[in-house]
Length: 201
Image 1 (cartoon, rainbow, N blue to C red):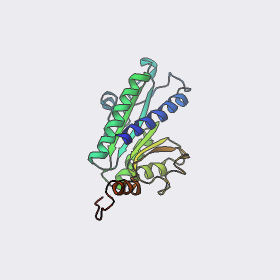
Image 2 (spheres, rainbow, N blue to C red):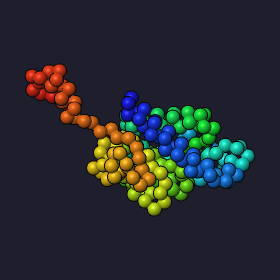
Image 3 (cartoon, rainbow, N blue to C red):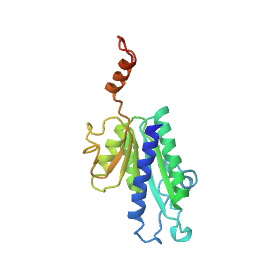
Image 4 (cartoon, rainbow, N blue to C red):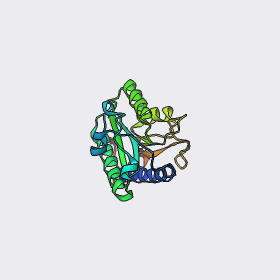
């Protein structure tokens, strides 16, 4: 629960920053999004590129978000669900609209690269990667275009080189880690049961 709350907080923080930077653009600019995505918050790769949103008519600023999950897994799916739920809350709070392009690469690197290429082609304002391989691929793909990236469920963002430091991620990327401090866990176990000999983790 703490990890999910942290993810939501970081997401909210980055999106608020995005509002400020994008808010300076002409509000009468036409933007595109998928009908299905605008209604349900999801869009498959097949639905990309359908222009249906006109800011000048609606008066609502629309932001495009590319959200990719690494594999169909209960804990990772829960993160995706919480991110989507928080985005819908922000829509109501800030009076904006999100077109969310969601996809799952099913642990296939080629599919992952294609998904990210689709996000870039659709000119998303933000990418969200769930799990380390997705975060690393998004980081590599945005070195030149500087599209902001948020990651979640990355066990060692420092060791994998995704961030420069935990305090100052650097570049265009930030997020949350699901690192398990096994030393602290063992210390708590031994504090409770000093005579413990066999521990399953």
